[in-house]
Amino acid sequence: MSFTVFLGNLPTWVTADDIKQWLAAEDLVADAVKVIRNHETQESKGFAFVEAPTADEMQSIIRRFDRAPLEDRLLRANPAQPPKGKELRGPQPPVAAAPAAAPNATRIQPRPDRKKRGGRERDQTPRSAFATELAKVL
Image 1 (tube, rainbow, N blue to C red):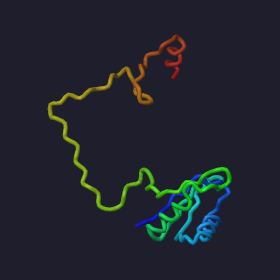
Image 2 (cartoon, rainbow, N blue to C red):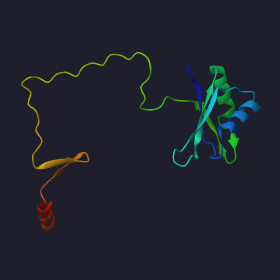
Image 3 (cartoon, rainbow, N blue to C red):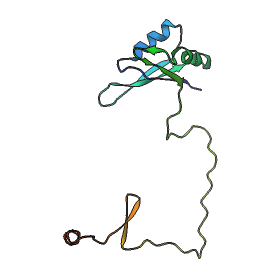
Image 4 (spheres, rainbow, N blue to C red):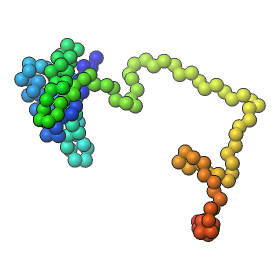
């Protein structure tokens, strides 16, 4: 089981070594510290993840650093959430199959003079003389 702390609202100059020193000064233990950086500029994005060895250590880190002042800001510390869009590991419940369409159900056919674009249907007939001439060329 993972005991990861999200540490946010960090100044961009903060490094993993800085966080490790802060933890050591408070007699707190972390298995790993990762400061998240911009891939192109390598500048810190202002947050990090601290992996604690136990749930109690995780809570101690959160209590110490949540709303702690640093420069002109207050740090944020809370349990890390799993990344959005990632599936949870472990057994998954079976997915029900979509019901089959009735054999004599009528399907709605798209109108031939309309084209779906950007989530909306647009009429393909030109609206001006310029548009008519442009449509002929294209």
